[in-house]
Image 1 (cartoon, helix red, strand yellow):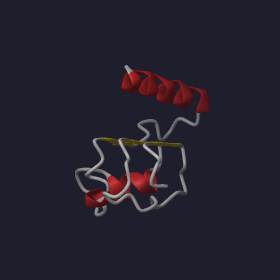
Image 2 (image 1 turned 180 degrees about the vertical axis):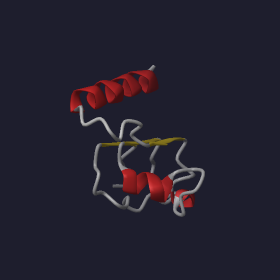
Image 3 (image 1 turned 90 degrees about the horizontal axis):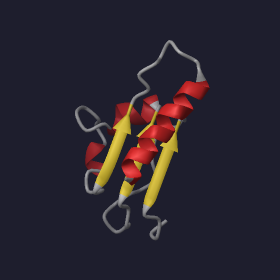
Image 4 (image 1 turned 120 degrees about the vertical axis):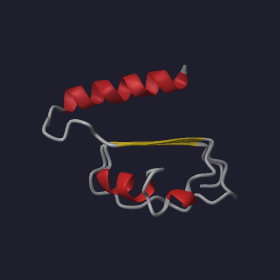
Length: 88
């Protein structure tokens, strides 16, 4: 995966770790949304493995704010809005 520059991971509730993303890789963008295990492990404030991805220039790890809401269409709309904002 050394030539991969962008990685977007969305709604992977059971995904618990990321592949090796050391500084020999050319990642520029990492976006993780609605992946609770990844959020716990890699978020900037308290994630024990934040240091493994801290070198990525644009790194956004977000929780799903609507835990009670199973409306996947709503989640998809939020995700698409987030992607559009990031691209602009």
